Image (cartoon, helix red, strand yellow):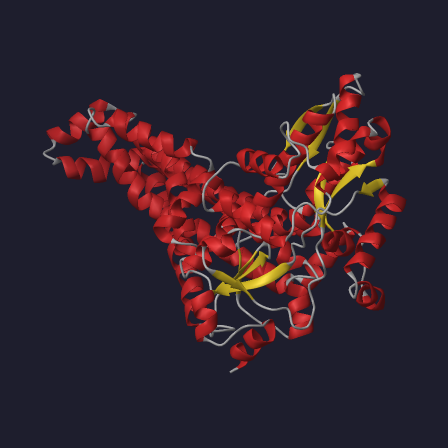
Length: 552
């Protein structure tokens, strides 16, 4: 509760902005769905031959996972508000089309025949008889679509469209319960408020349809006012919001996209603002689409990792951290001490990768997966074979250690299952498959993988509670995110990467009963990145150059 209070006190302006953006995303997508869905429902009700095709098509759209649907929009419409609205509109079609179809099919045929006998045309029957009688069912579809879209719109932050999902994703990545609740509670309240409002309109329509002539006139008058209010909310409010934002002066001439975790870290955007004075208009975006957005000129500056293979894939360049904000991020496996006590042979096996992968080698491995589209398993196996850790040829320097490990396995060794985890980016997938192969090759243990666990705190939380036994981590992350070291102590530690490693090793053992094994050999630090051609054109090589350019 304290975290929520702190969040509300410090982020109230941004919370209001993101709530308005979330509401606008919901209303605009529902408005588009009404324009498309109701005519489709009418078509299905009027043309029996096309009804199965229309209903099945919108049904299939609803079965596509929302994250996947948002991802499909990126190659077509890029990132930001437009693809998010289109994806949300597609999600809202099913209840609108089905309810329109059901409502029209439920109109009493005798009423339609009576209208036709009075000389009404088909269009007159539709507008003056069928649609008014079907209105309660259609409004129920609009009500359902609206509530669904409030929830799905939280995922719009995945592609840089903003909304309350920014707080939810950021809170999950940073293990900040207050931030998660700061996004989830307003989204839930918004869904309830809209459901109540549209439920009231639906009841008015139902009473107007089924009441007597005097009652119908009274309710119709009230209904018109209600529909004007709802129409204003659906069309005028979001249009005004986005028009205001389009006309508002931008904080910078360059577009930035940072991950939720980077936005909330002191060795991320918070530190950039404090140390460099960086002030940019930032879209919060998923790591999975961030690099591609930069390559396709949808973003100009992104947060990234220095060993990421997508740097080469998309011809990006990492800006020099000339004020040394980003600490060293040496990669190493971290393991629960309880696991090492139960299976001591794991220590030697996991340490087989000590200093085995340098920066350039890790970039190459990531490149094979990200750009050449090879599987992490294949890339891991090929690398381990190339350095003689798999197969019949054993590298001389490891011969005794590997022979001893194989000997323990032949004698039975300890048995059981260990669970290895990884975060949700390429490098972690590759490393965890390497460790899986080594454990299976040199011990009698079975290995279960839990990959793609999301942000740092999800992985470390799983390690602490025993859901996983080991995962690869980075010293800078351990220092700043878990241990939360700040001030003069942090400045002293950052002068030497070995000091950082020894400090996190000692403190994790003391605080968490988690052991850092030997470093793998590469340093995967945070960095700001730009397209190489653009950076050259603007004469930006360092973060300070970027700040100077933004101030010019």
